[in-house]
Image (cartoon, rainbow, N blue to C red; front, side):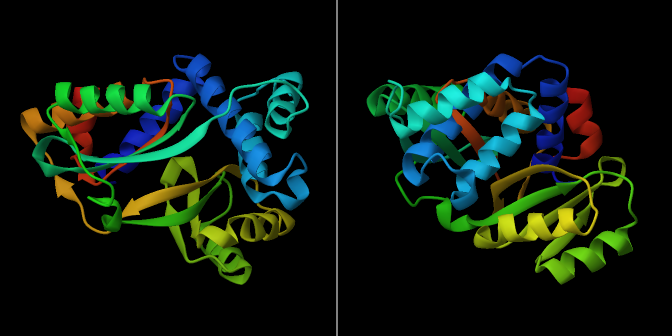
Length: 248
């Protein structure tokens, strides 16, 4: 398992333990608000909102909190206006990093992200510096239960691009960005139990980290994701799983 995939698993475990639930709620609320502002409050015709609502459900977010976020997005209630910004930079060992943000103050966020990179042994790059190293994909988690062959057959029929066996964590089905919702709907109709649904950026190549660089990179990921304006962080590092666990 690549280092970044392992990192994603660690994040899910932290959220499940409640260690990051407050921040998770904040990030999901922002995403629901922006999705509703851009595509309307009806999830039937708004794929981005459907994905955000799935994240809210998985986080056990109260329905009244979800509805307030939707109404702030559609303008029925007063709320902040969030802007989408993607920052690109380099971490220790030359790792490529994408930082996806929703902010109501671009200058503040830019300054904070730049400072975090600097403290973490990296540097913020110009627009386009590393984005070309990543492909955007739809990601659907299938909960444990079915066999790999069963998931493979149903995913191919649904129009998926790839299936990754996550062993005890089930399976990850990857799609084109536009096919995320249609494939998820087909998989549910086929009787599969689904978990997380989202868009993700996957690196075309990876950088293997060891020793001090590995330790610094994990600290940088933690620091970036701890920022309230940061929604997601993507990176192309790879760390041996045993080393990852020892550093955590």
